[in-house]
Image 1 (tube, rainbow, N blue to C red):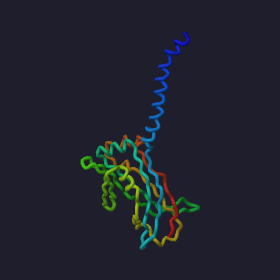
Image 2 (cartoon, rainbow, N blue to C red):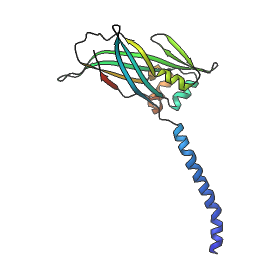
Image 3 (cartoon, one colour):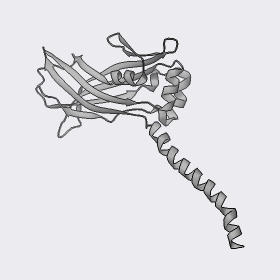
Image 4 (cartoon, helix red, strand yellow):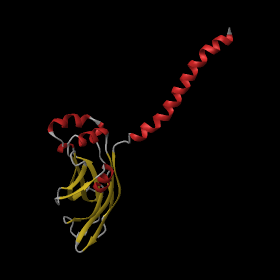
Length: 197
């Protein structure tokens, strides 16, 4: 009788073990595919050349499923890179001398199957065949002139840089949902370093 019960439960246990192994095999793959949406500023420098400060930065963009789906459905995604010059003061709050926003856009053209990155302040556009290449270009800032900073500042200051998806630039019907959906809240931490005159 004991052997008979073992024979009856054996196929059930095999199926359970097989399902568990399948689940363990496929769960890590799906979690790797769903990368957390984020923006990370890897490096940023400001160098002084020919009487002008030039910004160079490397920013890593990882979009959410919601943002990618909207992009593939014709929604233009706008990103801002904010740069500020901040004077640290001992007895008062910090003083912001200059603030500058560099706007960029990412768009997908369905018929041509290309991604387009636009530098809207300089009216420059570049096309890419993959989203990865487009995001890489979006995050590469090379020799961007920052004319707002004077070279003769005699105070000690820090430069602060942050990047974010601009929800205000989304189509009006999308904004209320975007404000309460975590997948649309894509922004970097503030990256800060001293201004060298």
